[in-house]
Length: 451
Image 1 (cartoon, rainbow, N blue to C red):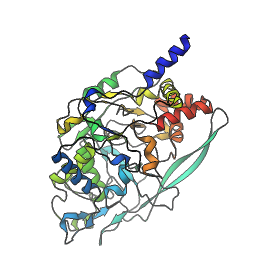
Image 2 (cartoon, rainbow, N blue to C red):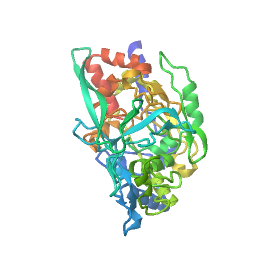
Image 3 (cartoon, one colour):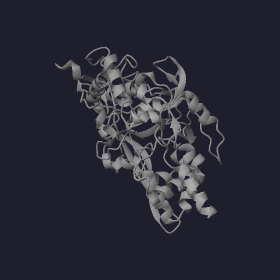
């Protein structure tokens, strides 16, 4: 009898946090489970806010064109770029994926480039002739930088119960390099596009909460730290919370840097686009305006992402889901993938403030071991440290984008593969999952996919 009581208590503690009373009038989650699950606004939104949301949505879905053009409203793409629209990588606001072979192009991912050292702000040091990101396309008269290819080595992992899972280790190569060969000390990092829903709720988590989470005692080898980054908007060093290495301070900066880096669209935060220091033709190419993205447009795009609801957890009363929630905690997954955090006051969109949310992240950096390391430091993040990715809505990832990948470079094709790549601070958790029975692992996966 006492055993049943203990199990019931543990299951209850592993369960999704209940909504706060303020959420009775303002819902920050959505029950939509279609391909539009990641595209729903929090409710309700004031008329003016809904207008801003719709304007931002239009800009996120906008296909930009190369300058000069008659329609200056949508001109400014390039002169170097990876894609011509935000949704080209973030399809329906979901995550991207990696190509399955070297012949496939990187449709929703990119490759970061740097050399050892740091800029004056502490950021990775870009290549003078390629910048900090490889650009696959160029405007007329401007040579595209080249192409990146992913090659994989497959390895079988044996799990308890005889199950065998194949995991793939990526390797990057380059071709058609237009501005010279890559240096021997090149640092690279392949990155798929992250999902962009629920970002406002992550922005509303107070810095003090992140510092407290970092200071909390943790079991085993688990540590966790904040990334201290330079904010172009605030002109000072602050806590980072966005990006695969928590290397961006605010959602506005994340949006502006992606516009510049991925599409060559300048803004007041990043006024110089993405031409590298020694790319003369790129620097001399025509532009549609200075800047090409106005402060009002950037604000609208930011607001759209702030107001995107997070998917609500599903089927939480099922026995297999509840058993998986217990196993999730027993395997120490919940230490980093925090199941409950409270937001603070958030004047930018007050409905996001003072909410008990279930993002399943601590937004902290954790050393994930050498197997996942890209050997490319980013501010205070080492080459093997990555931000804990939020798990909310992850079970709908392939509903929204059938090819969706997992981990920073999309190497994992399934959630189980992603777990098996966990090392470093998460090694004990990975080992516990490997040693679970086949049925227990399925319960765990059922729970994660219910989030």
